[in-house]
Amino acid sequence: MPKTLFTPGQYELSHLLADIDLGKLALPEIQRPFVWKKKAVRDLLDSMYRGFPVGYLMLWNAAQVDSRVIGEDGKQHTPTEFIVDGQQRLTSLYAVIKGKEVTFHDFSKGRIRIGFRPRDGRFEVSDAAIEKDPEFLPDITSIWVGQGWEVVNGFIDRLKEAKPEALAGDNESQLRDALHQLQGLSDYPFQAVRIGHEVDEEKVAEIFMRVNSGGTQLKQADFILTLLSVFRDDDRRRLERFARESRVVSANGRPSPHNHLLQPDPDQLLRVAVLIAFRRGRLQAVLALLRGASVETDETLPSADRDAQLDKLSAAIDKVLDLTNWHEYIKAVMASGIRRAAEVSSRNTVVLVYALYLIGRSYGISHSDLRTPIARYFFMASLTSRYTGSFETRITQDVQSFTQAEDGNGYLERLRQATQTTLTADFWTINLPQNLATSSSRSPALFAYVASLSLLNARVPPFVSGGPDGQKAAIPIRDLIDPVVHAKKSSLERHHLFPRKYLESIGIEATSQINQIANLSFVEWPENIEISDVPPADYWPRYRDQFTAQDLFHHGLSPDWSDSDYDVFLERRRERIAKVIRSGFESIGVGPAQDE
Image 1 (cartoon, rainbow, N blue to C red):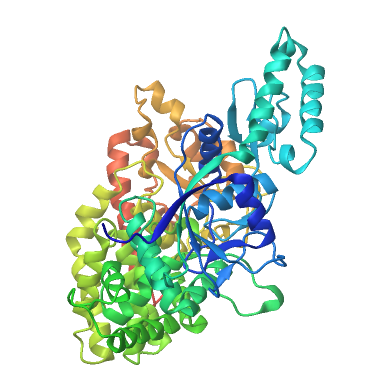
Image 2 (cartoon, one colour):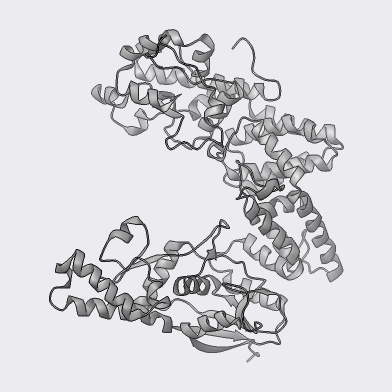
C-alpha cells in the first residue's frame, strides 16, 4: 500500500472557530477569500440542524506559508494550520456564529444574517418580513454572541406578547428545545483529513484541484487562480484588486478601473490575458501550463520553459490591468451607443472584445484609430450574439485569424471585414426583423435598438396634451439612460402602443404577443401613465402633430400606424426598427445622417 499524505480526524466546530479567533487556523494563499451565497449558508445550517453530514475539511499542517487570516487582523498566534478544502463552509459558519463581516463573490462586504423559526426548524435569509415575524429569531448570531438563555427568554417573551396562542400546551417547551438545539450547532462534529508539514505548497495545490475536479462548483479559472497563488501570487492579487476596485467609485479622484459598463471578475480578466499571451480562448491550455505541461501539447516542460510562459502571462496581465488601456476601451464601447450596464446584452462580449482591442494595441495602433473599428465590431458582436454558446472556440478562431495580419492596417482591415461579412444586406432586411419578433426584454436586437437611439440623438416623444402651449420640451433618450441618473422610478419606460386591455378585447391575450418588442415604444413614465389603456386610434391623433418626421423614423412609426391591423403593424414596425438599428450602426464614428 502506498504511503498516504494525510491522516483522518474529527473536530468540533467550536474548536475550529476558537483556533480561527486565536489565529492558529488560517487560509493559505492558494485559497480565494469568498463565502457562499447567503441561501447556500442557510441550507448548510439546515443540514447541520437536521444532523446530516455536510462534507469534510482538509487541513494542512505547515509553517512559514503565506496566508490570510479569517476575520479581523491582530491574532494572538502565527498560523500553523491552514484550510485547504472546506474554506467556504468554515468561513461562512464563522461569519454567522461570530457575527463577522465577510467578502462575497462580488467583492462586497457584509454580514450574513440568517433567521430561524423554532416551531418547525426552518432557516431563512433574514429580510424585513423575517424581522417582523414574531415566530422567527431574526438573526441567529445573537444566540452565540450574547447570553443564550437571555436570547431564548427574549424570543419567548416577544412571541407571548404578539402571538400567545403559539405557546399553548407544551409548545413553549418545544420551542425552547429547538433553540437550544440551534445553539448546540457550535459543537457540530466535522470530519477532516490533515496533510502533513512535509508536503509543499505546489503539491497541496495539486491535491486541492484533484479533490475538486469532479465537482461542478469550481471552474477552470478557479484552478488557474489557485495555481497562480503558488507560482505568481502577485498576478492573482492584482487581478482580484482590479476586479474589486472596479465596483466602487474611487475616493479623492484617484485613478481606478471603476466605470458604468462592466465590473469584471478576476477570471474574466484572466481570460483576456490568456488570449493576448497565447492566442487561445480555452483556459484549459493555461491550466496545463501552470501544471508544468506545454501550451501546445501535454508534454512536461522544464521549469525554465514554464517560467518563460508564465512571464508571457504576467506581461499580458500588465496590459489588461493598465488603466489607460481599460478606460480607452470603455470609451470605444460607449462609442457603440452603450451608456450603462443595463444595455449590455452580454458581459462575455465586453470582455472578449477587450482582448481584440489590446491585440490591436500590440500592433502599434493608437487608441483613437482603434475606437471606431472596435466600436463597430462590438456592436456587431453584441447584435449577433457572436460570443455566446461555444464562445471559447469562436474567439480563438477570431484571434488567430485576425493576428495573421502583418501590420496594424491589416489588423484593422480584418476587423472591418468580419463586421461587414456578418452584417450583410440580408441580415438587415431579413434576419434582424425576424430577431425582433420576440417579447424578450434581454434580446440583443432590443439592446442594439436602444444603443441606436442614443447614437442617433433620438428624443423621447412629447406625448403630452397639457401645458400652456400643449407642448413640453423633448429630452434626448441618451440623457434619460445616463448612468449617473438614479430616479426612484425609471425615467424611461417602454409603453404598449396597442394597450394590453385593448388587445385582450379583440381576442389577443398571449403575453408573448402583447409584449412584442414592436409593440413597445420608449416614453417618459408620466406620459405612460397618462396614455393608460386608451386604444391607439383614440389617443394617437392627439399627439401625432408633436412628432417630427425624424421622431417617427427613430421610433419606427408611420403617421397612420394606429389604423393598422395589429399583426400588420408588428411586421412593419419590425422592419422600421431594423432600419433604425442599421442607421445607428452606420453612424458610429461619423455621427447621424442629417436627413433621417
